[in-house]
Length: 98
Image (cartoon, rainbow, N blue to C red):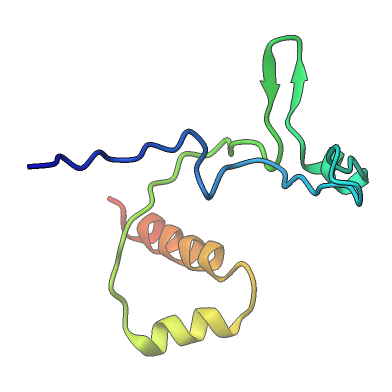
């Protein structure tokens, strides 16, 4: 009986990093400004992280069930509604601590 071998690919189909477009001649990738903007940046051997730096306040991600009308109220207030909901809960805690 023949044994089927699994094929292992060294490059993922969803590889991270900037996409490389081939030039019109197909010889080398086109290194345009967009490519350099999305490329990783190194200072020596250290990778420089991009994007927003980690926050200073410690928060815990969680799942919570709230009434639809409460959720609709905060979401209707626009971007930042989760921060406003956190502040409302914080005020409640401060008012009810003994």
